[in-house]
Length: 257
Image (tube, rainbow, N blue to C red):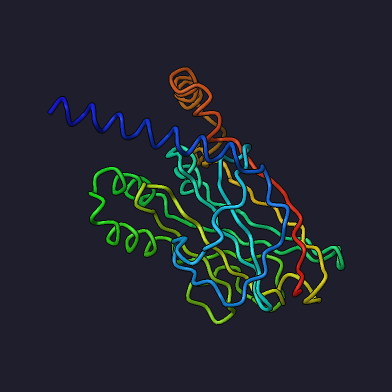
């Protein structure tokens, strides 16, 4: 038994070292556009992303890549740290766009949207379920991450839509075999820009803070404030990070050449 735990710890240390080394060799932001010939399947995995991850953003601790075809913009993100994907599950992710050709155009999507009661269940599943049940985990995750919030799109009257919608906006979440959290997005270019070629999009990825539950009848009570201070004292920067937003911005050229 002791040998098993030592071997497990050694394997985890090697994995962490490998991830850290890999991240150090990637730029903080992706600088080049990637034109793909066929659509990417959005299913919460990176098997269709044959080009791999093109950047590791330090402020959000996320690996990511962006690409496009003639109809859609694609993004994939990967969180390898449990504190980061726990924050995403608890506070959601905001992906927003600005079209430099139309300064009034501002498009936002929020995903994943996980109910309060389901957040700890997802984290516990990842810890407790053997790797051979990865398909079960991801089926459960997708069932709890089945809605997208969309803002700034006149063609979509309801801000809350299903991941199985008629607008062509797709998003999916899942875990890989190393318990890293994967997020995928596909957005039709027609919602982001009026032009289809030679246009720069400004995008922003924001990891929102985990909402702090307060006294619904008024301001925070003395007990709530004391509990929060205890959390800060025990968890330090990890707790402060969970209740603070992090983000990064980038520019992406839509070119069909």
